[in-house]
Every structure is written in structure tokens, then in C-alpha cells.
Length: 486
Image 1 (cartoon, rainbow, N blue to C red):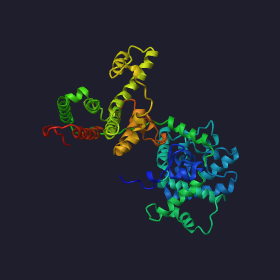
Image 2 (tube, helix red, strand yellow):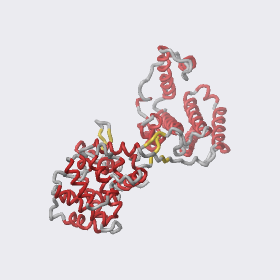
Image 3 (tube, rainbow, N blue to C red):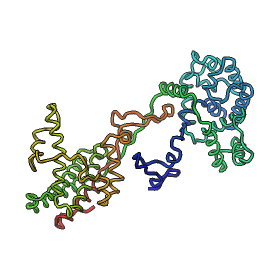
Image 4 (tube, one colour):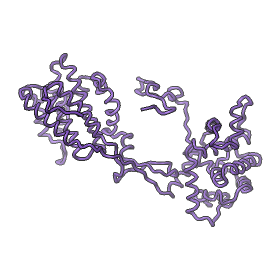
């Protein structure tokens, strides 16, 4: 997998052990000094009226008309520091009339008429007096404004950069921005930008210059205005939901499952002495059987593309890591197999003790009599302490490193743990759909009717089960006729 351009690698991040964070290079350098501002969410709505002009007249004529408007406003309405719509609406009645007349000297009223569906006559009488063309139907206005939002929302698009160039021009006209003669590249970019096609190679230098300069003026002193914009347009437009459907694995694993069952059956019958007397045998064969049952359940119930499939992968990986850890430590720790059993039983005992203190509903899936039988199976529960720590005082991540399974932990266990714990990354991927509507800021909506699924886990489960098979044959003799291959 190749790294994305302009994205820092994991090794570029800085580990802050005190805070328990892995910090990005940007945040480590600038910290609280960073103040992020969104072009699409915060600034674009303020300047959408300029975008409508460019849409109507095209880039060349649009620049001429918009440039003339901004220059005349800067000289005739000196109280307006920026051509933001909220600032224009905040002017006095006479000043608003003056601004709108300057605009109308260059364009036809219908060009900005789409905005009147958001800014109604009751609250914005001067604007509607100038631009509300009643002959244009509501649907036509809405179509025009939603198209403009879609075009100008991407902050690095050619069209959005054109608006951002006009914003810089307004700052130059009113004297808020002055450029040193030494900045020859900047002067070249601003001088040539409106006359250069976006297909020209030089624009690869000009566009970043424009975006960086406009971003320096990227404050949003009227968040209420932009919030109201998104609320208004969002409520009058429909969601356009898109979903992702991943294919189910084409491989049929039924034969593999039957082969694995025969192997476990052979080992169980051939090592009956160990089955009767040996904690080691119980843990190894029992754990692998548990992993196989997990695989069977997700295969037979078509859970590979679902949330529970990821629960299964996480469980199988943890079992594999634990088994390899126990095998690695058994020579130095002869009682490790019994202690591992008691560690698991102690978790059951803790729940049992709490259940005895609380009255469970009849429908509860925890059954105290059954748990009591299991807890007392190895020894009387009064001799079993409850272990509240990780087994052997070492977390699963450290165990994965020790047994050479860090890859499985880093890539799959961490990822699938998000699904097991219901963290937002998993919730977002599994149960939220994307709305492909720029007027809704491409928000997300609940996948109530399960129209989206997840990539199938069965191939990864199969690979993990093959690791279990390797572990099994390393510890118990298996005839050649029962060998399983990929």
C-alpha cells in the first residue's frame, strides 16, 4: 500500500506517552495555535453571489463584471470591508441600495434571484426589491442555487479558486491587502490568473498561491449567518443517499470446515489420555474448536459482510495470540495452562457473584445455575480469586509482539475492536450512509434498512484458521491424509 501524497506516515507522528496520544506533525508543531476554517462550510456561502455571476456569464466576462462590481463597491461604499453577504445585509438601508445598484449596473436581476429563496423579503427587503424576479419559479431558483453550491463547495476546485481570486481582488481594491514588490511570483500569479486558462501549466503555480492568500483572510465572524444558510437550503432539498455494497466471498468454505472438524476429531480420539488429564490439551484443542465454531457461525449465517463478522475476526485473533503466548511461556511457567483456565473462570465468577446480589430477569441470557456449575468445575469457588488484570499482567498488544503476530494485531485486531466496542469509526462505516448532496454538506444518515454492507471477512478468517492448523500440527501428530492446504 502506497502512502497518500501530503499525508504523514505513522513514523512521522510523535508519541506523547504522558497524554497517551500519537500526535500529528502539524499538531505537535502548532498545537493550540491552529485555528481551522472551512471554505465550504463557513466562507463559501458568504460569497456564493459572486459564484452565481461567474456561472451565468462564464469565466472571462464574469471576472470583468464581478471585478467591476467589487472595485466600485470599494470606492463608493467604504463602510463595507469585505464583500460578504452577511456584511452587505448588515449595512444601512441606503448603503444596501447603493451596493445592489452597483451590482445591477453590471448584471441582470435574475442572476442573483436564486438567493431570494433563502433570503426572503420579510428579513431582506432591499435585496428582494433588487433581485426577486417573480417570473422565475421556485424550482428553477432552487436548481440554480444547488448547482452553485455543488460547484463551489470543493475548496481546491478551479471554480472555487476563481471566487477566492475575486475575494483577494476585493482586498486589494479597498487597500486591506498590500503586496511587496519583492514577491514577484505572487504578483505574477495575481496579474495573470484571470487571463490564464485552467488548462495552462502555469495555473498549477497560480492556483495554490490564490488559495493560500485567500485562506489568510479565512475568518468567519458570522457563524450564525452561515449556519442559517445551511439550515435553510438543507430543509428545502432532498437527501441523495448513496450506499456501498461489497461482494460476498465466492469461495465455499464448507469443505474446509469439514476437513478441520475431522482433524479435531482425530486429535481428540488419538490423544484421549491428554484429554483426560492435561490442561494443556484442553486449552489448545478447546480454543481452536471455539475459533472454528466462530468461523462456522459467520459462514453458515452469512455474517461475513456484517458487523458480527468483525467481532468474530477479533475473537479468533485474540485466541491465536493467547495460544501462541501460552506455548512460548510453558517451559518457564509449568502451571500456566491451569492458571489460564482459572483466569477465565474467575471472570465468570465475578459475574456470578454480581448476579447473586441482583435479581435477574427470566429472559436474561446469563444463567446463574449453569455458571455456578462451570465456576466450580476445576475447584471450589472459595479457592478461586477474581483476577481483574490482563492474563499474566500483559495486554494483548504486548503478547502479539512477543509471539510475532503484531501484524494481525495492528491491522485487524485494532480495526475489528472498533466494531466490538461500537466506536464511531465502526458505526460510521457500518451503519451510516453518505448523502451525495452538496447542499447538505454531504452529511451522513442512518442506514436504517441495512442497504449497505461491509467487506467480507471470511477470507481473513480462513487464513487465521490455517494458522490454527499449523499450531495444531506442531503440537499433535496428524496423518498426511488429514492435512489441509490453502
